[in-house]
Length: 235
Ligand SMILES: Nc1ncnc2c1ncn2[C@@H]1O[C@H](COP(=O)(O)OP(=O)(O)OP(=O)(O)O)[C@@H](O)[C@H]1O
Ligand SMILES: O=C(O)[C@H](O)[C@@H](O)[C@H](O)[C@H](O)CO
Image (tube, rainbow, N blue to C red):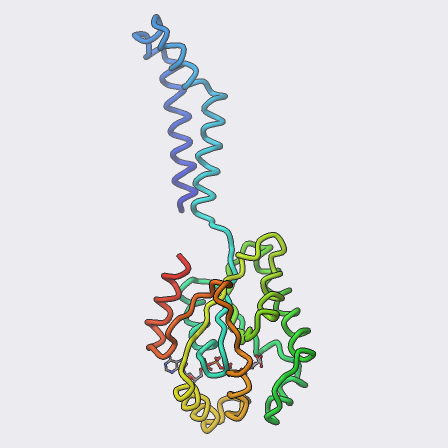
């Protein structure tokens, strides 16, 4: 839409310039020194450059750089719920990291055994490649992923090897009691494989370094308020 306006504007500019220069309607300016400057300004090659600059500017303004937003936090903090809503609000796709776990990881968690680095690193590398594919094709994407430690987040950050800031993290911050309630309720409803016993191991592992500048959102709020806060932090 914006581009069509730009093209229309460029077209009018072109025709307007032609009328002014080629129909001689600028007679009153011709004699003065000003007229050569004006002629230069209306000259087609100058117009062409100007049009290219305007179109490029409009394209850049209407098509900002793609980013990856990682909604992170411990089990039950709301990554899937919030990530999906944010994806809809930003009109981009949402990827749930849980869908990329190999069966062996899921079996381990079901049995109440926390994942090790050996379990997580290959999984994070796959997720990094998925983010990379989206960024390379200019698509903004939301990922819901625990990303509990800096070393894990650094793997995801490398999705854009030229710009680590292209991958942004948002931490869903929820108190332990509310987390327990949510995970217990979800497990009782048979809705998820993650047992409540694993929650403490996740809380123990979560490490957020102030220097990383991760945006922390109060995830005990209603989902709509959380999504609004995240949107405000991003734009
Ligand atoms: N802001 C919220 N307010 C109320 N309930 C919420 C909120 N966010 C999530 N929930 C509920 O809490 C439960 C856990 O949410 P969700 O599955 O989105 O968390 P998660 O971080 O993706 O968990 P996991 O990492 O274990 O997959 C769900 O039953 C969900 O409906
Ligand atoms: O790093 C991890 O241990 C995993 O990502 C877990 O967080 C689970 O995937 C998730 O919580 C279950 O839904």
